[in-house]
Image 1 (cartoon, rainbow, N blue to C red):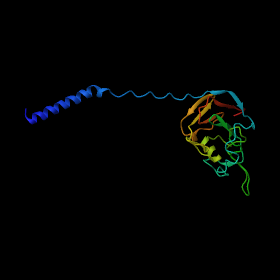
Image 2: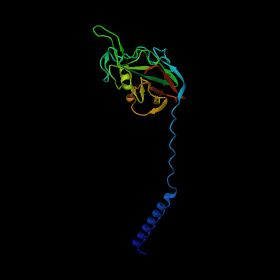
Image 3: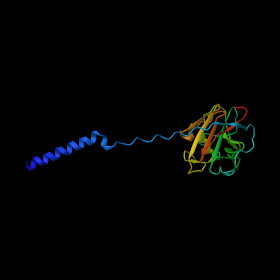
Image 4: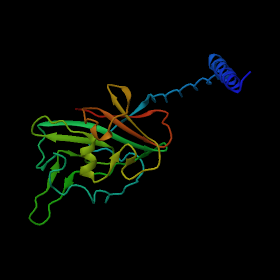
Length: 219
């Protein structure tokens, strides 16, 4: 056999061997992909409800202190929300609960309320609160559609998927409860609408066993 024939024979043998390896899946094939982890279940609404009607007692433990609104609104319009004399023609409430590793944190009181100073008259932002129970008031001369991000801007605290009121470095999950039905919210938390009797729960750190349940009279 000539040298050229030898080369051709070796080339053909190599090609046949490659085809055999491909046809049998490369000698073992790819291992199956591991199953996707099961989604974390949505916690149920607590069967124990706390009534926060009127001016309620504080809920949770202090975390931010009463001077936490130092970077908040001073009377200027913020995120389209004006600060004016209170007008309750349109008046609804939502509730905000922030839970850090299973411990409910107190939302400071009188957020969105601006005291008179010098030539500036006192005013109320159309999103504000009156106590430390977590209930948010939306009051305006006509129906409005406000979101949680506006309240945090009035408060002067950050609100993102990885930073709530300056708390970072822990997993954060958002839940909304409407008519007793709890839903996990995976969108932009700043866009969560403030609706009548809506419960907004921010879980930071460890998984909740139940969503805090708050009720109040009226809207």
